[in-house]
Image 1 (cartoon, rainbow, N blue to C red):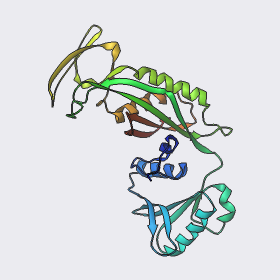
Image 2 (image 1 turned 30 degrees about the horizontal axis):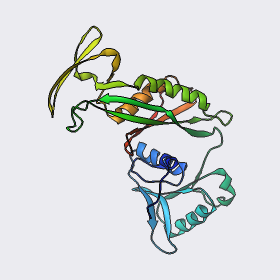
Image 3 (image 1 turned 90 degrees about the vertical axis):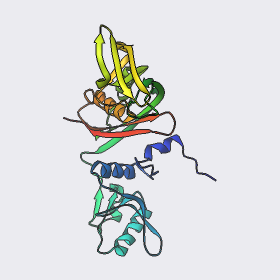
Length: 267
């Protein structure tokens, strides 16, 4: 029987397609990617009984401690991997079990850092684009995309951002994207009043078309979902409260494919 993955599970999938156990594991994966550190997820430790570390990198092992079973397994890993570099990440509620371990990173309570996910049916938009550098996509075509946004930062009174306010900010950005034609600004050869003339030579031949300016969205780069993620982050950054330190954007292009980017918010 094939395991079913629900919509809620997608929030714990890293950029390599690994389905992770918890938000903490996903956060570690994002951090390693941000630092350009290659990693193996779910690494078996040789010996008996079977043990599996959360991550292995070229520098050593990282194990996430989400409960008492993880603490016991981590203690065995330390003994079995004597001489190797290994660290654990655990919640302060486990502190009483970790008193004798000096290589545990505990989540800080002051200031408290957290993140929220925002998913809503209104976070979807229809658009057209052309990718002249990709043969299959070098003709005018369209997609329906859905968006999920993650905000990361310092909580205030156990609150990062009020959900209703965060949704309002995301909807405002999505409204700018809906039913627009996305194109790299370098393909705009002229503007005549309220119309853009767009021309390029692509794998399918010469394209030369005019579009109403108010229906076009010019991008600094190709009209890929990766670049759309970057543009959503850029538009969101200026309106976010100062305790938000990072923004992650997932865009699904159709079904079961898309892009995820995470960026630090400049202050």
